[in-house]
Amino acid sequence: MTCQPSDPPIEDLLRDLKPQVLGIVVRRFADFAAAEDAVQEALVDAAMQWPRQGVPTNPQAWLTQVAFRRMTDYIRSESARRRRENEIALETCYGSTPAEFEASSEDDTLILLFMCCHPALTRAAAIALTLQAVGGLATAEIAHAFLVPEATMAQRISRAKQTIKNSGIPFRLPTQEEQEQRLRAVLQVLYLIFNEGYTSSVGSELRRGDLSSEAIRLARILHNLQPDNPEVAGLLALMLLTDARRLARTNAGGDLIPLAEQERQLWDRKQIAEGIALISDALPKGALGPYQLQAAIAAVHDEAARNEDTDWPQIVALYDLLKRMSDNPMVALNHAVASAMVHGPEKGLELLDAIKGDSRVAGSHRLDAVRAHLLELAGDRQAALDYYRSAATKTGNLSERNYLLTRAAQLSSEL
Image 1 (spheres, rainbow, N blue to C red):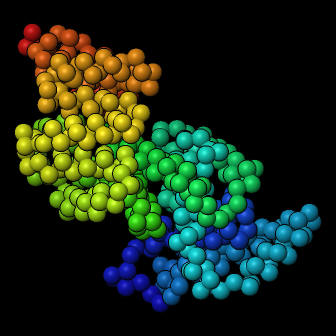
Image 2: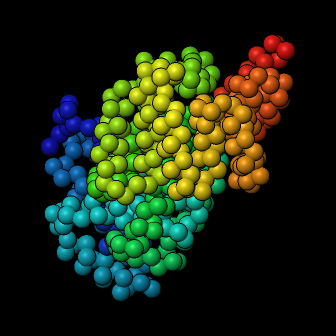
């Protein structure tokens, strides 16, 4: 069978199939690192052969069989001291059928997500491993996204795989209790990937579109696997509603444009409609969570035709609920901004004073940037100028730094 014009590009097809095939191979052989290598070799074979020979009728089964053979070769090479494992692998490999491979692919992808976000891993390791194993990104791409040498990222991923191997984590769908515990970690990792893509913590560009797009793609996979989970739907809705503003966030020169000044006709209305539909369906289910609340807040922003039409009282009410549910200083920071829009900048500044001693946000450029904005609204231009300059020294993102310094320069010219 050859590719037709309507078929997805082979590169996209392979990326979609990788987590399914990797999950199957890990489940069969219980060796994450070796399985990842075997699947990667199968993907390379496919990338070279399929453009010439055509995509197989069952591409997942093709990749799985090739990866199984690679695993069998690997085990055979260890036969002197691993004869028993070799016999088991051979029996497993030739006793399975393509139909069996397909039957468990969705569960395997979900298990793989849970495994990559296991509590035994650090947050940084979980993000890197998820991007490689489930997202299909190469080590070099992940290293580039986080501005670390490729060798450093390779070591981080290798250690994560070794941690999983040493922990003895079984490759199975977690129990209901384990799912509830680990799902929070899965959602957090996907949200962290999205946030790093939407506003990069370092570098010259405001955003890393590859990361934010990948986070949305993975969130879609998770939502397809757990369509009735309102928090999964809430996270996907939040990503879509936030990412919908991407084209309006910078000008032609790459300079940051704050939400209040964005040209809203550039917002992606189709994406906004999808996000609103998702959150509208999730909220009535009763299991209210932080991602649903954040998505609801994003929806209120996106539904306003103009900045002055924004329903700030509703946003404050949603943040009030979110603050009770989540001990997150960034939530408190955003709540202060929303409160200032309803009750005046003095109220916002008062709320900022309540969190300035929180070590999680005390050194953040965002705290100084918000304080500068509220001081400017309150008419204290000199203090605002000082805080804009202070915030500029604390951010690693060049686009944000330029915006903050520009604001400071404008205020300086008005003094």
